[in-house]
Amino acid sequence: LQEGVATPGTTITSHRYITVEDDYDPDRVWIMSDWAALGTLDFYRGLAMSSDVYFYYLAGGYYRGGRTIFHGLGADRLAHYAREYGLGAPTGIDLPGEAAGLVPDPAWKDGAIGEVWTLGDTYNFGIGQGYLTLTPLQLLRVTAAIANGGDMLVPHVVREIVDPQGNVRKRIEREVAHALNISQDNLSIMREAMRQAAVYGPAKTGASSAVTIAAKTGTAEFGQQLADGRYVTSHAWYTGYAPIDDPEIAVVVFLEKGIGATNAGPVAKQIFDYYFDRQRLAEGDGTP
Image (cartoon, rainbow, N blue to C red; front, side, top):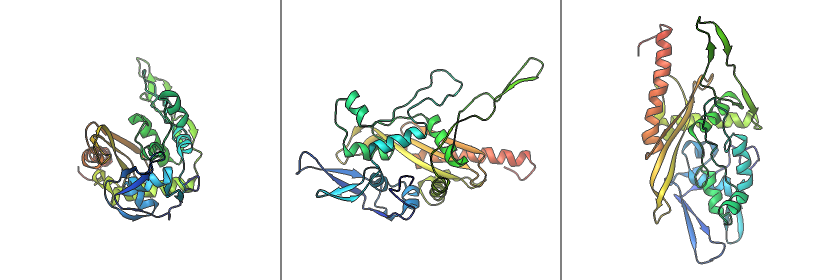
C-alpha cells in the first residue's frame, strides 16, 4: 500500500495455487499453494481470507512466459518494511536474553548460505514464512502499532517501582521507540482488513462475545515438505486488538503444532472475553 504496489481495490484471483517457471530449467515448474481456491479478492478480502496467492503477487509479482503480469514489492523493500516494524531487532523489553529474530534479504542469503535469492524466497517472505523468524512479542508490537496509529512502543513488564512503605519511586511511562513511516490512510486500511478478518475470515474463531475485535491468523509451516509444497507440521498464530474504535488491549497467541484459526483463535477469544467481562463486572455492568 505504502509503495503503491496495491490499493484497496487491487484484485487478484486465487485458483488455489500459482505456478512459477524455473529460471534455469524451462521444463520445470514450481507450485506455490494457497489454502483454498478463494476466487477474486481485493485487498480487504485478500488479508481477511488469509490468501497466500494474493500476497505472493504483492510480495514478488507474477511473471509468465518472460512477461511481467504484476509488479510486486520485491525482497529488498519487503525487508525494509519488516525492519520498519521492528522485526530483526530486540524490542527493548526489560528482560534478559531477548531474541532478535531474522529479517532475510538477498545479501543475507548470499553471505549466510552462499545461494542466490529466488522468487520463491520472496513469495515465502511475503506470507511470513521461509527464512523469516520473529518472536510473539515482536508481532505483538506490530499489532499494537497498527491499532494505535503507528507508534512502535517499547514493551515493559514493570508498571512502577515502589519502596517498602508503598511510595512510588519510579513510574514506567509509555515509551515510543519510533513512529512508523506509514500513512494514516494505509494504517486505517489495515485496521479495516483486520476487522473484516474477524467478522467473516479465518480470524472469526477469536471473535469475542464481549467486544468487537480486529485480528489476523497465521499458520507457520515447518519440518518435512510434501510433494505439493506444503509441510507436515505447522505452528499456530493469532494476533488481534480490541475494541476497534478505542483499542485497549493487543493479543498474540502462539501454539506449537497447530493451525491459527483452529487452535490459536479460540485461545485469543478466551483472553478477550476474560479481559472485557472482568472490566464490565468491575464497573457493575452485567454478568460474566
